[in-house]
Length: 79
Image (cartoon, rainbow, N blue to C red; front, side):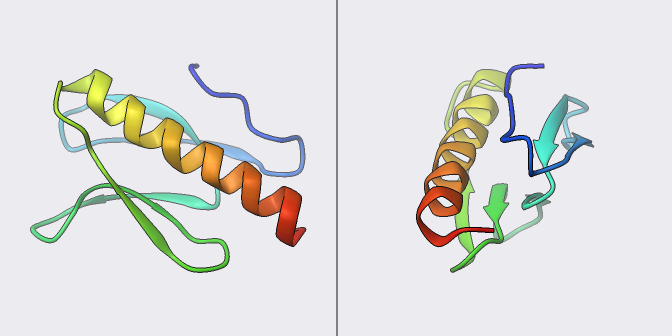
């Protein structure tokens, strides 16, 4: 799909409430509730990445931000 994960982080398919499917590193979760519509990185400090406006493109942009932050954390904190 649209992301490549570092080899040490397995990918899994997640589907949004809108029905869009994404391959996502296991350290990132999808949250679709009243408090957040977006992605949550659970490595080090848990961090939310709300969906950006623009439908699927905004969801992809938020996921990409979470993946970039995940990669940075893995490189600096280790796994």
